[in-house]
Image (cartoon, rainbow, N blue to C red; front, side):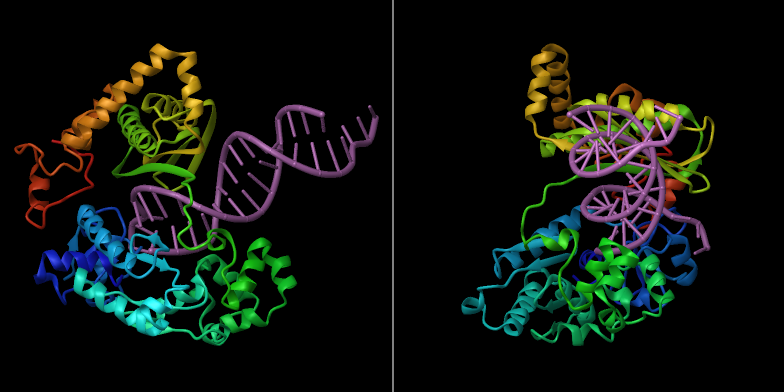
Length: 423
DNA sequence: TCTGGGGTCCTAGGACCC
DNA sequence: TCTGGGGTCCTAGGACCC
């Protein structure tokens, strides 16, 4: 999808059309740009750029916090359209999908023809623009769709993959970021064509497993990691995490632990929804100077319960935090999933305690479904006052906002973020 | 410039086991 | 006293993607 978040915002507020729009937060907030309109991009604004930088580059830009529920709604429509064209649809990210079109020619015609039909149907069903790349591999499809933007269709003929990629910068290959790009530049490789001319063994010696995958990519082959799976194949999640960056760094132990509690609850809830039991809990701690540590611990028995997750996260925090040091970010991650049968065994061992917790948490999930994320939480999560500002709840009771929040509300209504600095 | 949040994959060292 | 080889699991950090 082309500038997906911005385009959806424009549908709800047509006055934004053609203007420089930045989605991701307000101009004075900590955070980065999630999406920028094409008008904003002309000022040098792009995604992942700090909001404050974007505000300096383009002072007249309109800053929007974003509306996740709207994006979800439109994503659903997008997905429905894609389903008309292939049974094998893989949502690669919030605004990208792969379709395996093998065997659909009788129904939809030649690739270019079906791509144009998809393009037109997407527009009429969602009012949104997309770009389509067609290729014999996911890599080629992805790179060609990037080159087709905005609002275009590009077909790379079978056999022409290497020729298409050769003149492109190595950084255009998905998986080659800043660091890899610099390493390649250092040995005289600028274009994908330079890469394709390298000896495979040489690349493997220099860059290990990645070097080998890189050699394949330079020829247009899917290689390495997730690219090796079939399109549409269901891949189980490997981890679930939540993290929070404070608007201002804090060294307040009570407040930090309250935040840990809230993050633990969010992780626990996701585990229960997905039916996962996690064996490893990880704490992430980022200090004022941006130095970041992670500390993990594996449990004897897997869990999906908020209080167990919090217990571990809190222990890791208390044994690793430089007491009093100003913290910028806290995160809680669950990983190392095991199937639910282990949880059942846990029940046999300790039926009363665990069953009571499970019931309590299920009831809490239900309350949150009905009244919003901030409606209920374990006691520690309510200290420090941060719950006073309701999180992701459009039906929040009025009369609690501070002067600063009221001034923010003079713009479009906030839908998320701001889980701290309560009244 | 001042750096979000949610993920995946890879590397590397050390503990531990046979 | 000077210490193999193979395997798995755990932990920490970092590159990368959107």
